[in-house]
Length: 529
Image (cartoon, rainbow, N blue to C red; front, side, top):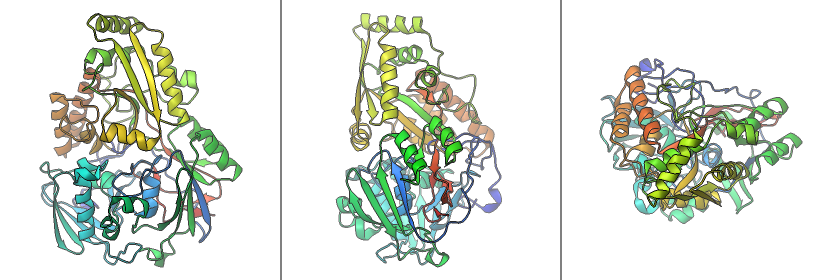
């Protein structure tokens, strides 16, 4: 199927797309799917050649290599798109894994082995070839523990064989995986030049070399990154990229971001704030993508107090998702589980417990009497929206006895280091946007996954995740993820409070806006009208 088995098997089935937000319009491939809805209009047609665009981001990058960057539209993925281009990507309209730098990603044996075929003649910005050996080196670098890659689970134990410069044979390390192409699209799709990697990760992160439409010209830490057109770009004969220069500036306040676009001081930014996305649709331009995940509290099941399921349940009973948009006026869509209600995977039989203050207080008292008072710190990525939500939770919990919550709000680089590498937290304010349950639900919730930051171990969940990964029949996938939803709302490794929405917000002079994966825009074709 395009970047999957064969084109003939691109038939859509009802499933959802994993990677970090969007709704669900029940059109899925034999192993994947497209959730509800995605407003993915191109934003005004073809852009003119030339000009400079200013994009805003809430945080600076920790690093610009593909290993330590977050592949999320509201974080680092637009920078990755500018520097690297994807090998393959998930089409937001169809849910299909689609080739880009690659010509194909196929399996002939139901996922036991895969072949990645690269486009001939593609070069990195330094003139070196993007070949099968380069992909192999990148994926092996992800897999090394010393790299501290946030995508290590995707590359772990892969068997990799360079067949020739264009072809790489891949054997998934966990056994046959019919959904491996989604793993590549969401976690292994950005490739850095070996010439950069071989100088060490510090160099690779600060002096990145990719095959994307732009190169890094300058980086003022905490303020601005400036990218210029790549003279060796593989699509330059098509007049791409459209822009001569791209500037990404850090503006933590999202309302200030919107005001900057309205006033003409900036051109575009990505947002996961529903109120802002709605406001922008009437005042400037915006597109919205809705998927799995959204915003939630993650509980560290390996640390007190949340190593006791009663403490997790008490928090879920004490807080009401519907109160958040009413109080903060932020437009959040209250969540009932990790699966949005519009998802074809959502099972109304299995939802999070409804708020019940009396039952919550009983559990808080019971735990305190057993010497397990619910006293914890919530780790929060520092930005105005997250800080307001955390303060809301703290104020609501302060109305109960025998529970105490502190807030640790830190910048995104420290935040990622603390939860992903050190796993040093009790509770965490977390956002996740998944284009499909595969591969990120598997990575996040499987007991033995190195990306199971919440240390949740549940045999029923493991069985459901494995069934969902290996199933190719739509009904079997739906059953697997219903079983997973049941395990999650029973054992509560997380408590979801807002369904996911994400997308670009941009001025009326911006055109050529097309989304992929988690709502990131293609940087080769975006420009000015």
